[in-house]
Amino acid sequence: MATRISVSLILPEKVRSGTAVAGSLIVGNDGSSAITVVHPGYPAALNLVIFDCSWNQVTPDSVGKVHIAYSQVEIAPGEFRTFALDDLAFTTGTAQMRFALGRGRYYVAAIYHPGSARLPSESAYSLVAISAIRELIVE
Image 1 (cartoon, helix red, strand yellow):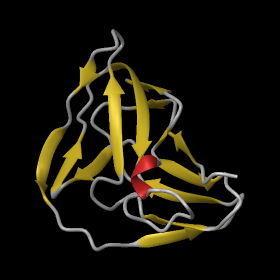
Image 2 (cartoon, rainbow, N blue to C red):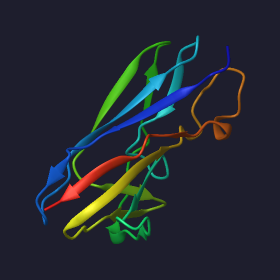
Image 3 (tube, rainbow, N blue to C red):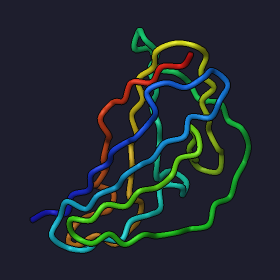
């Protein structure tokens, strides 16, 4: 069986405008061998894509330069790992990106890339997992 990873994004249904949108990212190993993947907090491992109620993409704001230590996580076959998200933020390159959402209805997806992790018999760059789209209402 080929190595497969799955990603689920857990968000609250509603939040107040101006508050952090805390949630979770669940990364699963759907394959038959253990895998070692890059922690989702590492640069370019996680990207969040947000659309407004008209399906226009919302652009995140760069909030500063960050340096995050390299970290890997091993996931056994059939196992899932849950990672806390303190807000709708991610790191790309050395910039931390964050969304400031006004009142409205939004659609959010997580794109997870395992980086240069050890994966059996496959290129780490061929594995990307995209979560289902989650609806978020900001009041």
